[in-house]
Image (cartoon, rainbow, N blue to C red; front, side):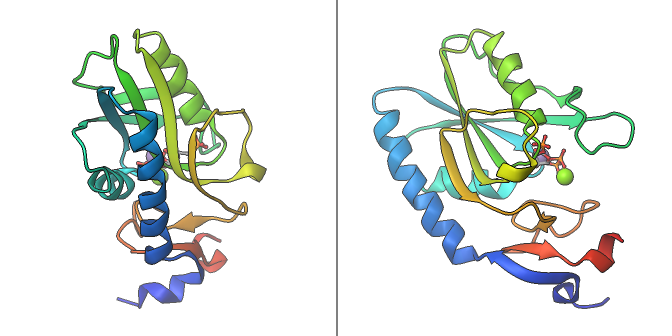
Length: 181
Ligand code: PRP
Ligand code: MN
Ligand code: MG
């Protein structure tokens, strides 16, 4: 098989920058959630790497749960109509929830999730996203912890896929147009 790097035009965020940023965000979360039970909810599958590294940057008790959602529609990648593929195992009633995401693109997935979680009686729901694309957002999503604002390019790696590939790259990189053209 060809080298993965042939499919990439540039490294946007390095492994080291990601780890430094997660450490910084973890320090903020430690302060903000002091004395509170904290439930981290990872959004499968993209958030797997962020969740694994962010959770381990927190030197305190947390709980972890996972939700798998997929948006569907005609043509558009994220229609905002979201289907639950795997629901939480945890009752959110009276919980302080931090949703952990790899990226906010159009914002439609998170906007739907936030509404869904609010209706389950959570005490608080906040969002941590490693990446955000301000120029791609179609709906406003309140994100308390943002790693990096990035340009509106197709990025892969560190959990982010193109057609289920590239999730295992250690850095976040821009996918070369010849791959999806
Ligand atoms: C990607 C990404 C976010 C969402 C962001 O997930 O991981 O969850 O899209 O896009 P949005 O802001 O436009 O809604 P995807 O639906 O590709 O599933 P995956 O995590 O399994 O790759
Ligand atoms: Mn996702
Ligand atoms: Mg995806």
